[in-house]
Image: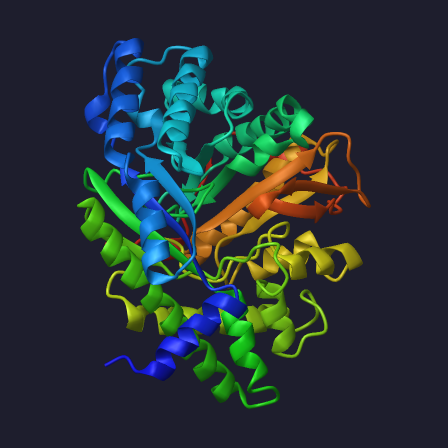
Length: 454
C-alpha cells in the first residue's frame, strides 16, 4: 500500500532532484517490409513506422501530465536497416535514400530520435553490409533524427577487426561531412560489442531480430536522486552506502515500471523491458560524476573512481531487478563526458583522461561515450580506441561501446558544444603513438576461451 510519505518523497525526487523517465522507445520490426524494389521498400517502412507510432508522443505527454512524471524523450527503434534493406539497396545512395525516409517518418510522428540505421557484423561482413557501413557518413549528414550503430564484436564470436578498421575511417568521414555542426554526425554513431536487442537508449538502439512486431521499452534515470540520498549518509559505512543506493534505485525503477505498464495499455503495444540506467544530463545536479564525489572523491578520475563506480553500478542493478521482473537493455551507470556536467568539469581540469575512462568502462554501462578528440586524429588511432573497448566487452561478457567525435578544426584545450542532452565537452588528449600496423592486420580477433560454454 502506497502511503502519503512515499507520494511526497516521489514528488520531491521529481521537482528537486531531476528524476525523470528518460525515454519511451517503441521498437518496430521492419522485416515484413523487405522488398526488392527500393521505392516500394521506402513506402512500406514509412507507412509501418507512422502507423505504429503515430500516437507515441501524444500518449507519452498524456502520461507525463496525468502522473506528474517528466518523460524527456519519445523514440523509435527499428530492425537494423542492413538486414531489412539488403535486397533493395545496391549503392550508397540507395541506403542514404532509406535514411532520409526514416528521418521524414520520425519528423511526422514527432519523436526525438529514431535508432536502427544499424548493422550487426560481429563475425564478418557481407558485401551488402560493408556497403551499408560506408553509407553512414552521408546518411548522418543528410538526416538529423536518425541514429546509427554497428555491432563489431561479441563474447561468442570475437572482434571483427576488418569492421573496426573500416569504422575508424567512417567516423573520420562522418566528422568531415558534418563539420558545420561541430562534427555532430558522430554524436549519432556508436560502435558496440555485445549489443542488446532491447536497448531504449540512443545512439545504440535498434529493434532486435529476436523481438516481436512491436514493443515498448522504457529508460529511466535519476543520478540527482541518488546523490541526494547519499548526502544524508555522508561518512557512513560501505554497507550503508550500498543499501542507500539500492533502495533509491528500486524507487526510481518502480516509477519506470508504472509508466511502462500505462504506456503499454494506452498504446496497445506489448511492454518489453525497463532499462534502469543512471543516465545523466548536462543540468547541474543530474550527474553520475557528482555521485562519485559524494562518495568521497575530490574529482571523478581520482584514485578510487573505478571502485566507486563498480559499487554504484552493482547496487543500481540489485535495486532495479527487485522493482521490475523485466529489466533489460543496458542497465547501469552511464559516463558520457559531454552529457554530464561533473564529467565535463573533471575532463577540463585534467582529472579525467581517456585512459581512466577506459578503465571505468570495465565496471559500468556502457563505454567511451560522447568523447571529443582533436579533428586531426588518425583513423587508425580511432580504430585502436574502438578495438580496446571492444576487447573489454568481449572478455568481460558485457556491452561496451564507443561514441567518439573527432571535431574538425578543434584541438586539445578547445571546447565544443552540441546543445540539449548532447551537452558540451573539452577536446581530450589522445595517445600520440601509432597503432597503424596492428590495425592494418586483416581478419578477426578470436573469442576468449571462456566463451565456449555449450
